[in-house]
Length: 225
Picture 1 (tube, one colour):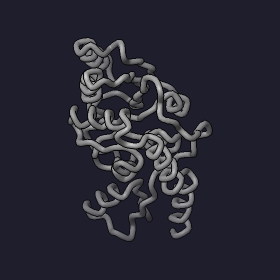
Picture 2 (cartoon, rainbow, N blue to C red):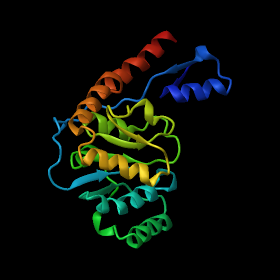
Picture 3 (cartoon, rainbow, N blue to C red):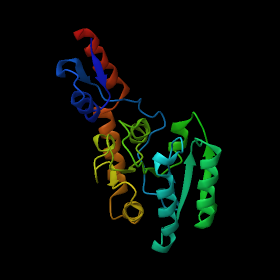
């Protein structure tokens, strides 16, 4: 009777494929507020950048590693905390080979799969999501926002609906190593206010992407049916 799209862009996608307008409701994804969320301060020591993903080619991991290789020359003290497993052993080997070839393997902590996403977010200063293709409405971005972790992400379908450029994080073009490195540099060097991004992320999550907001939206669709 009804279809629920989890983001406005996916609703548009469904309408473009001939589904009647009145059948498609939009209820954005939502996640609970982080239990360990607190007001974040600008880091004083090394910055920890964290992708959280199932690592596969579409996630743009190569772009992130290549951008990491250029950060020391910009005077930036950063580490990568990579959380998640790999889709295949072959891809895992290719990524490690790339990191070794570019001389950044020692600056990367490979954490592997975990169910404790909030615990990992608490150890990160920035969430980095350099996806090459659309994401719908990425749950990990919403989880980061709930925890007050600013996001640097590709401007691909679904992501800009959560991340507001220079308000909750920074958006870059997909596949752009230089733009990703520049965005990280802007935040680390204080060109963009880190604390303001953190506050903006938590506020936007609470307003639009909480579990309560999602549940009430789904309940309204069922009531209408």
